[in-house]
Amino acid sequence: MQFDDAFLSRLSEGTYRKCIERGIEHARLNKPYINKTIKNLRRELIGPAPASVVVVSGGPSLHSNKHIQVLKENGFTGPVIAADGSMGHCLRHGIVPDYVLTVDPDPHRIIRWFGDTRLSERPKDDYFQRQDIDPEVRENEIRRNEETIELVNTYGPRIKLIISTSVTPEITERALEAGMELYWWTPLYDDFGLDTSASKQLCRELKVPCMTTGGNVGSSCWVFAQAILQSATVLMVGMDFSYPPGTDVYNTQYYEVLKELFPENPAKGLISVYNPHLEQDWQTDPAYYWYSKCFREMISAATGRTVNCTEGGILFGEGIEWKSFRQALQDLK
Amino acid sequence: MNNLLKGNYEVKNKTGTTAALPSDDKQDFEDKAMERLGGSIAFVMKGNKFVWDEDNEDGE
Image 1 (tube, one colour):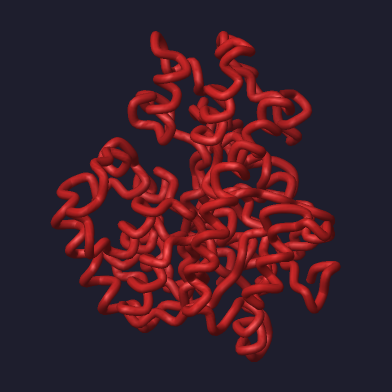
Image 2 (cartoon, rainbow over the protein chains, first blue to last red; image 1 turned 90 degrees about the horizontal axis):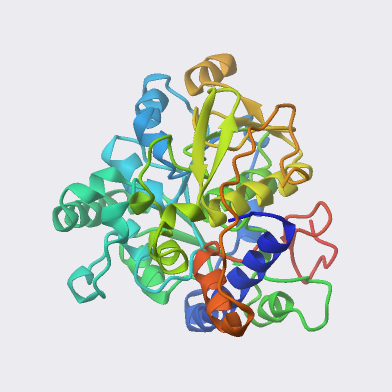
């Protein structure tokens, strides 16, 4: 498969088609719950912007490099921003994120990160079993889910949920049940400047600002750190956008689709990208490759430093410093 | 692809085989595949703005 401009443009359009209808439907269902927005949060933040924040995304390096343990050991005192898929891992290892972001409009999968109180009613799905987003969840799905429910109920009141209007109202209800404080935003779906813009229409209807996403929740965390917290330095962990060398295509996020496209060899849908910092080839798929392209597009608009401390993956290049997490935390002292 | 990877490094270009995607008469199949292969949420970047609001249509 060739991930050229034409292919990535079609992928971008496909993502839009997939999420726009459901995103708008969810936004209208979420309307009764909307109170504070990211604009309110910006006003509530008093004092100078944080010198540094840590963004915890859910890539496989987060686990293999034990970066949450590193974070704890180094006594980082700034804000921690977690993608929804990393919240459980943070809580299990003694870190309560200050902010958690959620954006994906999937009606059944994402709520698992909050502890799914209706797990037994969900359609059969091996999504969590096949991947390394949160390997601890694979061990015993039911037990881990119960543990997540308990952890989120315990620590929810200490977490500000930066919640997109696109998510299923089940997540909204679950977050409120757990005592989280909610701050709303809407993904920028299209050109806000156009009269026909769905984003602008939702903004008017819901009185909620729109924010650029980067195509996924981890990148949205980075945008939030830049645009709302206005941090001078953003350290990122778990931002792989790829799979470690040797990963079987079966254990990749889009295996089911790749199997349909290339029944004889689903691995044809992956490409290798050489990481010169690691001197390794990492495997990536169309969506993750698109995420890395989106990120590179956003980086030029950043006002603060971006330090990728993932120690894995394919996100490097101009505007992105590459450093070990331990070293980056040391340098802040 | 070369114009997409802009960095201060040499990339070992291993784009693999150009696979035979479904033919034109399977446009719908392709469109559906693109939706399923796509990301979590739409991405739009315009100018140097990340946040857009009615009070400030030029963004923040």
